[in-house]
Image (cartoon, rainbow, N blue to C red):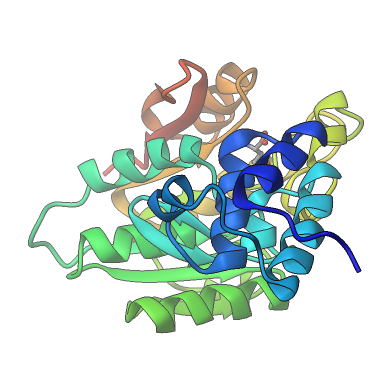
Length: 275
Ligand code: GLN
């Protein structure tokens, strides 16, 4: 039997394991089922045995590098709370740049059709559907497990996105959209950055020796699935804007430009299929 820890001691223990202060507080909140403000007012309260074992188990996972989102099972993206598991990439704030760009291209009242390729948790598709209720959003993923996660998120959030299983544009053969968006895998295989991403699905992260294999497939197939004047917006790595812009131009896209994320990194590049 362990000695019961107080709230303050639990936080001190987390610090000794090298766990970030905010993360430790959020794990404590999960264990005691209270908000952060409660923690500050209850420094000397002791954890019950079930609270303590839950907290220590979660803390071990976090100390081993598992993303907080997987441990608590959810992540906020564009103001929506999404359920996440190790079947899907953790939605990143960087990707909100892509959503903002997409929304700027969707007029408030128009019946725009939008396709999200490689939807994962459904983050991009659901954010767009939520902000523009009149759009008809379709989302595709090659992973059945990811698609189940996304469908579950759509159900919880009451958002009418339609989901299809398959690789990139194959599930929407014969259909055309006003806007196609994607945050595909784009990290080069063997990139040292992957070491820090070991808990996330590799098929959502890496794409060939230069990270561009999936982006190439999407750009090549997209023109046949866009309305004249339709847009393709793609997230990519900080060092890929020139390559992605070139790919788009090579496939006949015009008005090609790049947007930067809040950290100042080139984060997405898009273009328009000529009318
Ligand atoms: N932006 C993520 C990262 O570098 C990768 C996302 C992706 O490959 N689509 O951590």
